[in-house]
Image 1: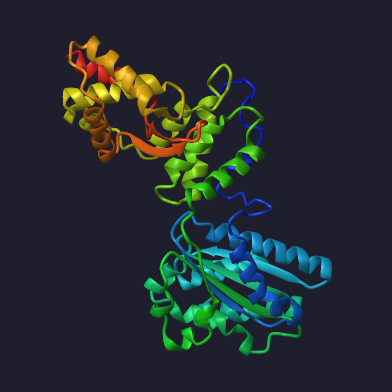
Image 2: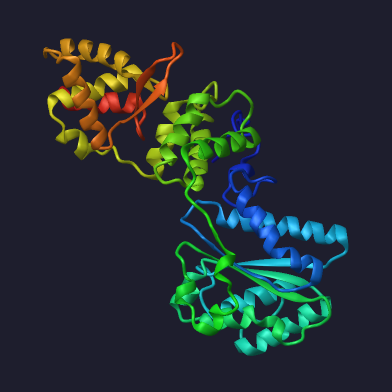
Length: 387
């Protein structure tokens, strides 16, 4: 069923998983520093602490808390401080009982899933923490799901866990993660334990930040020399629309899988465009059919001249445009009109443009295809135009 051919592109596929957390997270140093400042008393004095992470999908919230908790647990082990943490995905476990059961099973995997109320399970959990003298950090990921289901009382109970004596040097700290700012949705009692100043915000990644993330991930996961620099640039450009590291990593992963089927196993812009199309394609048959002849010839010229490169200059594309016009018996328009066609194609999402410095010190406009291999696009356009 599966090809026995040895992988020639991916040296460690686990490093392309969303679950993988690098030893060092780039461009989240500020958030990590704030976390260390907030949770220092947990390690030093056994106090409890709370924090709230907010930011859109793919901005590193969950990865940051995983890295921080793992680092804190490692420090605790080296310092003789019993530390532990448990992360609960509230989308998967979206009731109070499911959340508490998941936390309890972290210490007692065989705990039955029926027959115990939430207060009973919380008492059992308190006993586990007290007997082990653990400083526990509970992370509720996608906590807004619980709030929407009116499970605010559980958040209150967990945030006040230390108010009932649970043993010397034992404590429970709570971190909430949500895309939206949810503190205003909490009741006054729960909100009283969450300091608004303990909110840690995660902004969308910039294009350059995404490029750094992909470069590091490629170094860890891909064999040397198997991904072009312009392919990394293209992944960064595409994912910058969302500022989402998950999209960038997903494109890298799928590009590598596509490249495995090539003889040389190189990840070029063609594989990147194919990978983007697998995730979300904006180049549809309908859009191509809706184009008039001039825009089709312009797009065909771009796809022919770009080949397996990530970008092509407007000058190179315009030269190919003149050849295409001659091929189809049309008069090539002047530069200004050609540029208007390119801009119209960009508005339709069929191409993207960017202005960058060139080796001679000037500024050059580059054109790129978003999510369709140039060969495939050329063939589709030629089929339409030859009808």
